[in-house]
Length: 245
Ligand SMILES: NC(=O)c1ccc[n+]([C@@H]2O[C@H](COP(=O)([O-])OP(=O)(O)OC[C@H]3O[C@@H](n4cnc5c(N)ncnc54)[C@H](O)[C@@H]3O)[C@@H](O)[C@H]2O)c1
Image 1: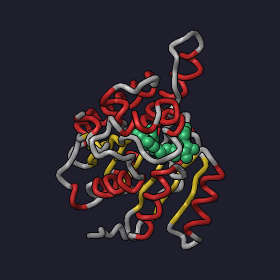
Image 2: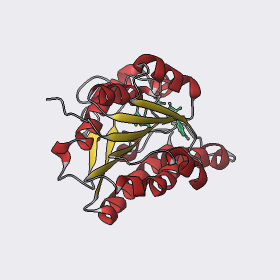
Image 3: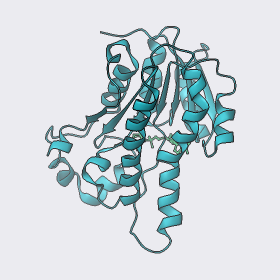
């Protein structure tokens, strides 16, 4: 059953990425107004070209790197039903000198630090709606420990702690949850899959296949919708059973 998001506004970070594009399209189809934030202008242009100018999509170019930048992102938004943080980077580390600055800091910034700043900026707008929602993105890399991705695994674990704390702090007005995707058929894990070999990767997934972006955006839409009105502080694993394996 499709849920109507008519009269609802949702801000999505990383909106030009694989999951973001599917989510933006589906929410707009179901009546939402979407504020799509991304640091990549080309992906925002593609998003606009795909949707057309019907006024339901507003794109905002930003890397969300400071409190001031996040305030700037939301300055023309009157209210928000939802905040979805998909923006992130997946960089391998070798745990050698230099990786702290070159990998750990940027990975923690993009996946975790930015949502702290952005939530501060969005909170007053979320409080203008009843039962508003925050949905964050963790990863199978948190649940299992990502092979060669220690900084990323730490960032995605930080997202879960952040989500659980925020859910308690903001109840009952704002519901806060996270989704942990497994390995998707998408560009982000492509290098890791090529390095480890697709057969080895698939052998770790009980459902025997990579996930689809729509299988993550569907979970996020559920968490944004009326059927999730009694769900907060939860991490939903959408990983083909991988975290149980
Ligand atoms: N694709 C997967 O297999 C997979 C698996 C587990 C978790 N995830 C998580 O899901 C989320 C979305 O993944 P995806 O596959 O759509 O990735 P993607 O790389 O296709 O999209 C991520 C988007 O975030 C944007 N971005 C990066 N840093 C940013 C910043 N500082 N400010 C604003 N935008 C920024 C990028 O430009 C990109 O458009 C990520 O948080 C990722 O870690 C993905």
